[in-house]
Length: 382
Image 1 (cartoon, helix red, strand yellow):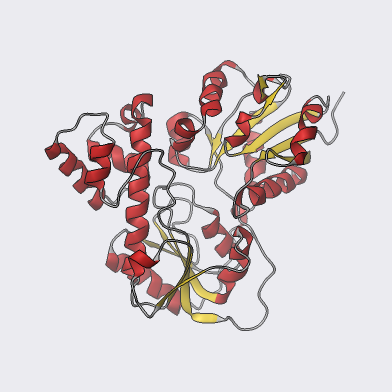
Image 2 (cartoon, rainbow, N blue to C red):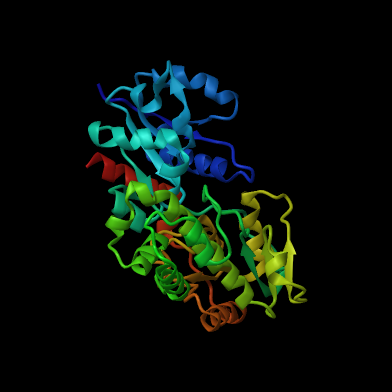
């Protein structure tokens, strides 16, 4: 018998600024638009209590997760992916760069062991290079729209950044410089001279994807560098690269009319009168799509993604707001996007282009959650 409107579960976890909850809601709506009857379960609230019964529903056909934290849930002392029947497709969605999840989340390491052995287990990543490295599906993040602004912009002569500094995911100590970070995280046993050489290469690299940049700096193939014994050190180096590039962008924009919504920037901005560090009200990720409409444009960075950008980039474009974004295969070439390299002149030129931008910015039709999830569902069914 054909199952009409098959059931789907979207598992998420609490995020301090509502990020994962927003994603779960968008995934559920997208699944509904693609013919499923989706229900959201948050592992940090009372909805989790009804999950075991839902997993036994004979019409259940799909389970998706936002990130890997929901993989810690067990049902009758069994992992989630073993508590469902073979007719149910199980699909964790990686929303951080590789390899943070296998280092930080033990149940995900168990999932990676089971993944090749069960035909109904899948994996998707928002970053294309990472997806190809680990053999996962690639699904970039979709846009989070908001009601369109009415009336004139509040800050038409300013650009904005939405990000925090020093919020990296590494599980070991990292520093503002590559040498010290590599000395503290050196499973390769590099001598001091090699440490300096690798650090210099990371400072000067034009390769955006973090793991690819690290592999090139080390001088080894990416697949060889991304081995289990090196993953913790790679997290540290990737986090150091993210911090270095974020700080580089903000420092390059000193003296320009810039508002930064985020934390820990004062130490890098100084007393620049043109730069304001602000807190959104409410301090929630959904506020972004409202706020970005009040500015000339968004200066965005995905300092370790090279094929698949964060939700800020596509959300701004969906609201008709131009962006300056580091080179990324997902946004390069789109109308309203000014790509930049990680050097001061390129960063400032891209931001200046936002301040002078006057053309309408068309919404990229491929950046809706409905479209992206539909494509992913077709790929796992093939």
